[in-house]
Length: 302
Image (cartoon, rainbow, N blue to C red; front, side):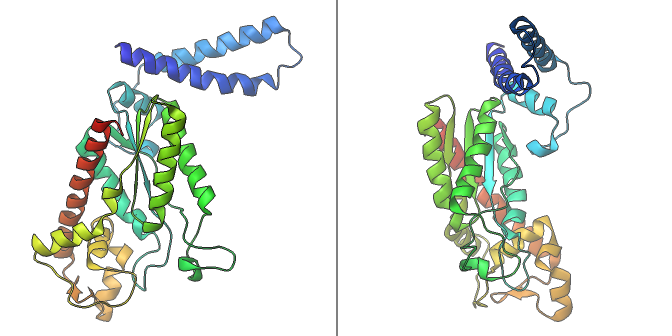
């Protein structure tokens, strides 16, 4: 109860300050007494909102963007004070995979991680990340459809998203990313936030999520699947099968079957349901390893 009261007070103070500042622009002609009265009224109205009963049953979702503000408030009160910020990308991924490859992966991964943790919610996926130089295009930016952010923009977005979550009472902010180019920026922002927050909340960069080598080892040793060839495109069986758990159209499954192209690196994906079942196992392996890493990081106070 005391914890919930602290969350409530912190939320009111955090939200009331900017409201008062914005309203001040239209109150310059008012007396100091009237301005003070209005500030008190606004704070009281906000406090009433924060104490109001939710009128309907909450949606069973771990995605903040799918929840109402009351559902997020109540989740925080119930102890869901860990927020996961996942970063993906929009980039070229060969002739078959959607440019949002990483974001399809993260849709299933963050859901699984949050539900297994039991005390976490997922922030909206950060879908735009550094993909190469925009002027004089480099890296993935050489291919149509890629959208890139400057590194400083990416880091500013991460900082703002994490700081927003902290302002509302989340105490552990976790960064995971499904692209190699995102890792350094997330690590740097987590370090900067911890220095600035001084223990009022903690940021955790969890690189274990992106350790694909371990996923391939699991696929080979536990599932008995190996890739005998390399097609030389930005694609592989691990990523393709995981994407299919979210949406087979994202890897153009039907079109590839029709064109006789339903394989990647020598492994067939023609059997849709069998491939999806393997994708689920690979995704669960990543979820389990990441949950272990998050729990260790939070438990160690990193």
